[in-house]
Amino acid sequence: MKLNKKVIAAVLASAMVFSMTACGGSDAPAQEAAPAEAETPVEDAAETPEETEAADDTADAATEAADEAADAAEAVVGEGGNIGVCIYKFDDAFMTTYRNALQEILEGKGYTVTFMDGKNDQAEQNNQINNFIAQKVDALIINPVMTSAADQIIATVKDADVPTVLINREPTADQMSAYDKLVYVGCDARQSGTMQGELILDTENQGDINGDGKVSYIMIQGDPENIDAQYRTEFSVKALTDAGIEVEELDLQRGDWDRNKGQEIAQNDLAKFGEDIEVIFCNNDDMAIGALQAIQAAGRTVNEDIYLVGVDALDAALNEVAGGNMTGTVLNDAQGQAEGAVQAMEDLLGGKTYAAGEQSIYVDYVKVTPDNVADFQ
Image (cartoon, rainbow, N blue to C red):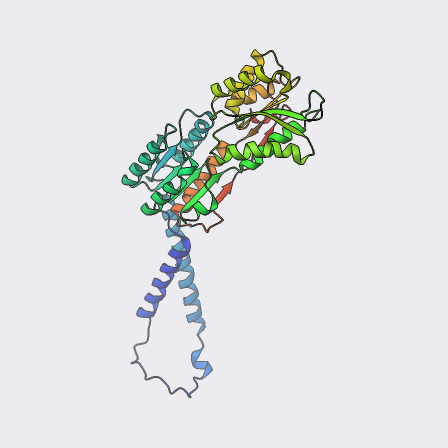
């Protein structure tokens, strides 16, 4: 456990001052207290230069010792610390990238880290969290299967007094406030949705390919219970309407972040709505790549007679953007979030607590277009 420098300094300084008082006092017998009205001559209270120098030396020594002790305590963090990491499911493409980044950072710092696959089953993940607690891990990093389970997860880690970082799926501020050793590290999904809308606004016809004065779209959503899916769905369209663009929702379907489901939804909608579809919004890149397969099978051409956008900037999606087969995507910075999660975890291990309303740490999204995609490949 990393110790707080201020606490160490206070303890050492107090100990050294006590030692000086106990060992450096006068041999003369104690005198009775002077009457209240008697004044002590000023010259009797003044320190000699030698006494002042000695006191300064003592304070400097205490500060130096505190710094050395704190540095030594910091060195302990990462050397043998046991960290439990719960991922909602291992075969999610983005969370695989995120998991690999976490593993590299944590092991590089000397932590012993164990990853558990929740298999998209909240009951399974709850058992994994309880097992980690029974094993007395030093900290937990949790990617919840369901945000609706946040209250139960938070109550469990609070009862066990385990410092915990939540990632990727954000509870509400009220839920977070129940435990001051809890922090969320992720991105503000409203920003990613807005950027998706901006990618469409940046096209030559602002998404209105057929020139009928409105943008007709389908929305392939992730998990509608997930706050990221909700915000991306809402704010991608809001960016258009805020810009004065009329929109028409032809369909909204749940794709569960899955490539095959994205392909199936797009295929069915393209058969049903045909050329009326001008834009396909996907809450993530995996579903967008599935939708691309359906677009190509239907004989449509992205950026000519239909637009397609996703989120995450997976390698496969970056290749499609570079090749002109996706209009754009939005970088969901797995590396930056992993670094932030580990830093927040170490802050908690060092004794830091978070006040209500200050428990969310955000990493910015970045728009990825054919013009800048090379910067991310």
